[in-house]
Image (cartoon, rainbow, N blue to C red; front, top):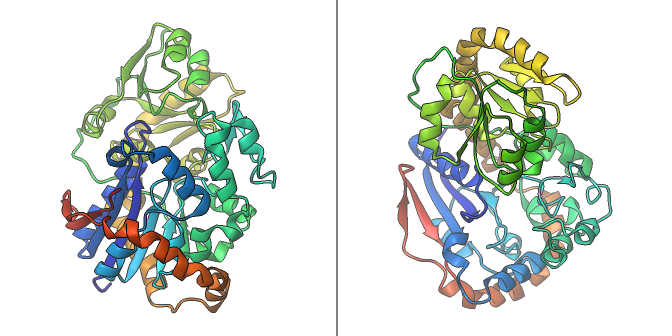
Length: 428
C-alpha cells in the first residue's frame, strides 16, 4: 500500500478511569509508523485539562451541544489522507465533523452512542433500555457515575440514536471490535455495510516459554460488569487464583475470596507480560458486551489459554479460535476448572500461533491498511453528503464560535513514543 498521512484523533481518558483504550491508540500509532505511514496524533488529555477553571461544566456543554474544543486546526495543517477518530468524549466537540470533508474512519471502542455508561450494563445485568428506545432511562437511573445530572448531557446528545449521531453520520466506516458489537450496532440502526470488524492487537513481547504451573489468574478492573465478585463467591477453596487489578469492589472482593486467592493490585504492562507465561490459564468472567479485551490478546501472546464465562464477546472468540474453554454461570465451577486443567497444557503453542496469525501487529496493520484504502480510494458518498446538508448551514456559525478557542489550542508538537508519529496536544 502507498504511504498514507494518517491523523488519529483521541481524547485520552484520565488516570482515574484506567483502561486499555489509551494504550490501544498509542500502539496503533506506533504500528502505523513502523509500517511506513506518516502519523499525526491529535490529542486532548484529561489529566492535563481537568484542573482548568470550569472544566466539568465546559465538558458538559461540549457533550450536550457538540461544540467545543476542535481538532480542525491541527488537521488542516497536517492535511491527512484519512482521519481516524478514536474518542471525542469528553474533551472534543463534534461540530467540526460537518466541516471536515476528507475520508474519515471512527472506532467504536464502547457503546457510548447507545448508553450513557457506555457498557450496556446496569444493576448486575445487561441493560438495553436506551438502545430499545427509552432514551431517558439513563438519566432516571443516573447511569453515568451514579449521577442524574452528569448523565443528562450524554442522554441529550444521544437522544436521536445512531442515525442522528454526528460522528456516525459523518464516518465513512465505523470500526467495531467484535461480531457481538457489530450485531449490537446493527440492532441500533447502523448499516452493516458501513461497519468493519477490526479487533485490536497487542505488540509482540519477548516472553518466556513456561508449562503454566502457576495456577490461575484474573486480570482486569474490580468492577461489577467484569464479573470478578461473582467469580470469587464461587471460587473453590484451595485452588490458587491471582487477582491482578484494582477498582471500587476491592474490599468486597477481598471479603468474598477464599484464602487461596492473592490480590496483587494493578501492575504495569511490562510486569504483567513477564508474569503471564507462568500461569495455567486466564479466567475471564466478564458479564457485559464488549470487544475482545486486551488481556485476552496478551494471554494468547504469552501462550496462556482462556476460561471464558458466557456474557461477553470472549466466549465466541474462544470457540472460534480454539484458545480455551467456555463455561456458564450455572455450571459447577470446580468441574469447569478440572476440565480446563486437563486440556490447557496442550493449547499453549496453539494460542501463540493464533496470536501471531490473527492478533499480532502485522495482522492488524494489514486490516487497517485495507480499511483505509477502501475509504481513501472512494469519493464521499452522495447519501452521506445529503445527510450532512442539514448540518452544513450551521457550519460557519459553529466555526466562528470555536475560532477563539482554537486559536490558542495547538501546542508545540512532540514525538509520540516510538511511533514515528507527531502529537498535536490540543490545549484548554
